[in-house]
Length: 80
Image (tube, rainbow, N blue to C red):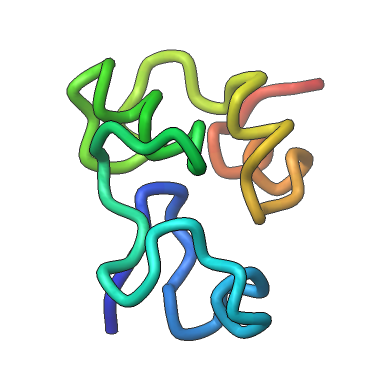
């Protein structure tokens, strides 16, 4: 099972299931990607996963990620 940069399993990602994954078959990896701000952000910050970043959860993930922001806050043990 491949885990994307945002932390969701690629196989169950809603965007991938719809055929709308901006990274295609390679999955969302941290890299320069004009169509995936989450992957580009992780690449710029040197994080393999959003969860590794000190700013998690951030506005980029909230706006562009497939995970509900409140779940990210819960995982980070932070209040909104």
